[in-house]
Image (cartoon, rainbow over all chains, first blue to last red; front, side, top):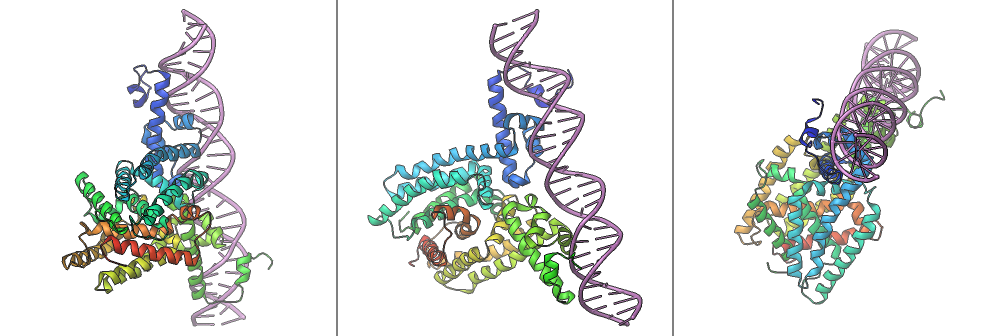
Length: 219
Length: 219
DNA sequence: AAAATATTTGACCATTTGGTCAAGTTAAAT
DNA sequence: ATTTAACTTGACCAAATGGTCAAATATTTT
């Protein structure tokens, strides 16, 4: 009986098969998100993921079969959170409120789930080989509806004419995700210290104000 | 004599040793920049780089010894271009001109050297393991002087108070580099077509105008 | 012309890696 | 209690990969 791993021992108190699967899948997904964020799909090894999850490598394959499949699952699990934040954009009629909440939600996501943002960043930088269809279907649709909202605001003269509405959206995405994707650079330029919660809260308000002014709204 | 590669044959007309080295180093650097941009350091193979450069793999090692060394050389060669663009920021007294030229220069770089931007993005996303000291020395210094410029403009009431000047810099970096790093996403949301030169020129102006308004300046 | 130096390239090797498998263990169903 | 199904895990393997090396070729120097 002395030949069980540490992880196995801590799980000895019998759990149902269902919860075992659920828990292990979550543990592996979290570990994979972290590793993929740091090294990308090809640069990550199943062994690194296994070590991070504190499980034997075979266990990773048992639950997710292949590395590529695990990678896709990670991307999809992140997309769920992103889509929730995205919804906020179309739930407000007034541009000031819509921008305030959407930018705020994106900043919060960068703070709470930086690894997820990095995995997507890596995926898109390398040409989105695995997520092409999701980008050109789901995302495209959402963006089209946002573009309509923005154009309507311009027509109603609620915001200034920004030209192509996409430019504004890209600025919001890029600026908010910067705090997740480039968090290391942000840290170095913050004298080597990670942003505290209150510092981040300040940045969040500053970003919101920059975006509001960029479309001609007073914060 | 029939056993020369295509590349070797095209180079048969005798060139000096010096130009051979210079030319091959440039060819390899360009190929490496492209491959590293797509797959990151660990995900790229020396074979891929060799194929892209249309040279045998041994040739890559002959000129750059190791993959890691080649990677560092690529990063440094990109930094040269970036620093040139960076200089423009401090050569103007008026914020309107400084921002206009700097944002314009960054946008141009995203257009002309997207692979370089991607390599750096990958490097920083994965925690800048190879470029830590450059970030915390060269970049830090440049950023500090930019922050001073911005703060002076605020004191002179030439721009609105943006809070922490870093927030503005990050917005400029993120927004301009987005067009390089996420060019694939931009393409998909542009109905699957790459931006034409004139479309890009439009985006550039729109980005400049967004940034100018974000600090309270009229374009 | 010949010796010295630099470049080119295929063959080769040790290590790493994604994935498989079979033998064991634990929980669920009968 | 026993069978069945799900989970666990170390050992193993074929393919890929970074890097070496020596032999061949090309240029420069003497």
